[in-house]
Amino acid sequence: SFSIGDLVSSYGALLTRYDVNNVLFGVPGTTASQAIGITKSDGAGIVSFYGDGDTQFYGGVGIGTVPSASAHLHVYSTNDVAVYIDSATNSPNLMFCKAGAYKFFWGIERNTPVYGLAANDFFLYNAYTSSVNLNVKYTTGYVGIGIASPTERLHVAGNGIFTGSLMVYSS
Image (cartoon, rainbow, N blue to C red; front, side):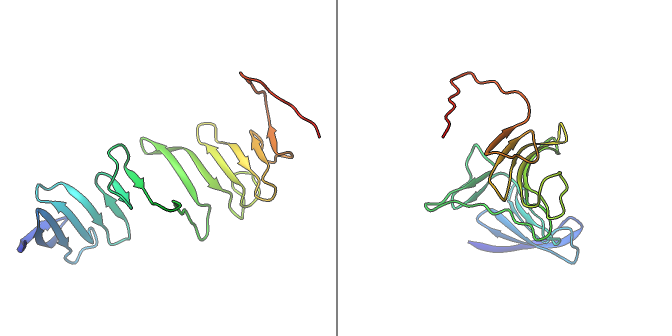
């Protein structure tokens, strides 16, 4: 069933209230503080689409599925699953934060290098030590651990500990 309710005030704007099976859809007045909001009838938010392009979800997000109870983002497909992180002008990064501050991130070095790597190198940056821990060279595929410019397929700067066997072959 669909019924149109009264005007309600939210975020300083008049919102038209549409009630569909206990879910409220808000259409904004003239302010940009909230473009569209969807809430449950108990006032709990589901999603808000803001005028500046930001979107806020309350609870989990499921893409191709319902949200998983153990994750805030759950992507599912019967085909290959891909998540695209793209940046037109800077480095695309996947940041890992704790209490709002980033601690580690995976990224691709900018065309004008910031982290001491070559443009387009893939890396893991450690904000605790302000250094690149792992680097994959874009041009060669060489992997560096603790070094910005690996010269072999695996180049480790520093000591290593192996708890199992280490086999060395030569051609």
